[in-house]
Length: 467
Image 1 (tube, rainbow, N blue to C red):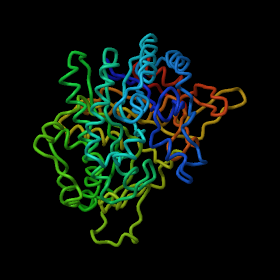
Image 2 (cartoon, rainbow, N blue to C red; image 1 turned 45 degrees about the vertical axis):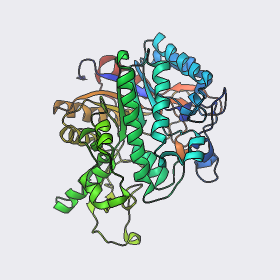
Image 3 (cartoon, helix red, strand yellow; image 1 turned 30 degrees about the vertical axis):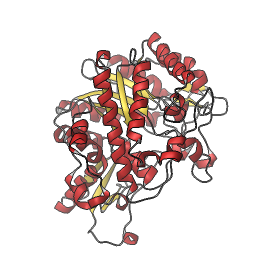
């Protein structure tokens, strides 16, 4: 029996510019922070870079034809800021405009609706070198002007915009832990970077709504969040789980939906957390037409008494003390894990969707990323039978369906990712794609999950799979 989704539910798949395009310095494109970071010794697995990636820049017509063959109707991709404006400000690169214009036209010619992300981590290098990137308040205006250029060039054909992808990752991994570009390590810079990211989003949205309302599109921001489940029924652990969610998602969603940063962040961070002016609060409030959500996994959260020495605290992955939470994160040993080491916990997505629904007054939610990495290989018959991915996606879609039955206004789902691609610090070791890519020959091979997902999209519902 097929579990049907709502009428007009949006099904799609997604990519980002640096992860698939290649052509890193071709046709006038400027360098980005990832062009440099990936070439810095020890920063990316195997010394991999995105110089070629999937070479989508040259193969986009074949790629769009493949998408159409697989029944994709909505495609989320990002624009490289440095391909449009090589320095991040000033002169516009017309060849960059032409590439994305051609891509959009090709998508539309194949009946595929474009969903455009303006920023997916590949900051123009000049902005980092000349202005300290997201640490400088001027960047909000630079971003807003870049957004205006894109609205003018593509807004006649693009009606779905995402300003920023995963502000938490940019701030924490880029400016806190240094494992992503620009590779900075600090306990204060993440909050300053996050502040300017929010203002950049708000200014871009303000321009879109005032100057481009005639395009009748929708614009929002995409934030990422894993679910945090209390380890025990103790009040302290329940508070720790809530605190972890507020430091993760509330940090960027509260100012937009509730008017300011979460109180727990203000209390714990003091003057390390910048404050908004009254005018900035007004600009941010309700500055998203939909709630973009990227979700992958779940962890248990338990309380750590404040004042516990850092060396005595063990945290799981990227969470915990680095975000001033004093939260211990752990995984259940029974949970299966993807090749990223992320636990497969579908009910966590249901709980997160319902948490968002209740905290932010039932917004329209679009899951702009959800997916998994596994060690996919091509067999002797030339097929890639990725049953683990089918199981993962089916189980998470079941969780989505249950949340919708409980009142959640979920309007869309984008599977990450269309292709195996450059997976940031993991290089090409981790494969998230529903299409296998041989990175030596660049041959594309749709996996079993691609054909399975095509059926889901076509029938607007979840099909039972062999497990």
